Image 1 (tube, rainbow, N blue to C red):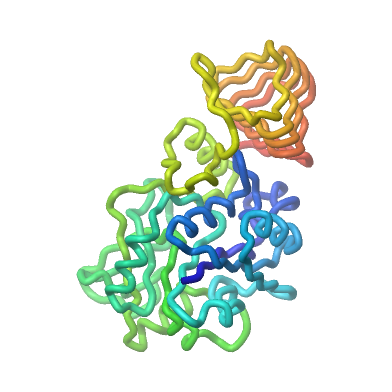
Image 2: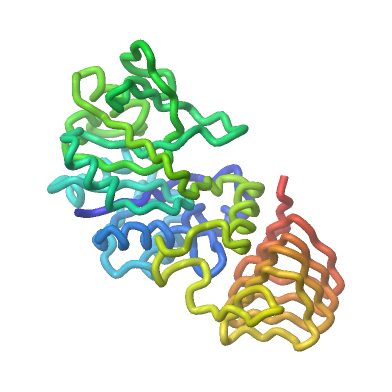
Length: 341
């Protein structure tokens, strides 16, 4: 079985951060976001991987190749092709067996093995992994009937009585039958276009509802990025699903009363004080007199000048914080300081 991570999005809501990185290449503690998707697939035994690219394609491919030695890449050079068109671009790579597709801008602590097993046992043409709708969010619902067959997506489809609405997680398991319902070319959405055609033609698209409340987060805005960053540091995200490629990979857990993780190459002055949890990346430099509150990460190669005060801050790799600066609830990159909201 092979897997694909969708990586072609523009990341408009995360600008100007995504002027430097595509969303799936965005740093998140010990690695780029796409690392955790690859790790999730690897845990399910899927190591032959594909991605599509469009925005900053060279950056996305370079980051992904650093994370996977078996990688197929489809470049969408002129026009972004959407989720359906993106999958279609890797048809030759994916068409010989069932395959898994993940959205590249999501952190999802899921064990894919039971999902794959249930998909194959069901005989469905495709399976959408679903969760209860997140509180306070307005994602388009996926509506299923009592047999878990998807009947409507974002208001499109056959519909029917006694349907229940769920949140789509961005994880699919598909059979090659999906390619029969794709257009020959042009932008296309897998949910609104391809799946709706399949449902209307009588094929079964199944909704796999997860009831054990696994951790799921869309990192598409600064607020969601910082919230996920905080959840990771405070241990609210299970780590076992990522194996040895988790958010603290190759970092040493600090002994009590210190609370955090530190890479062996990090240069942190002896009089730096922090409440924690804190994260100190490879080759970062934190000068004397720095005070860190809760939920602070200093990325690889980043620098924090003398006497700076940081609280709930993610300093991304290669960024610098000036001496004496006082920052709260922001993401710091080499180009900009982006507030939570």
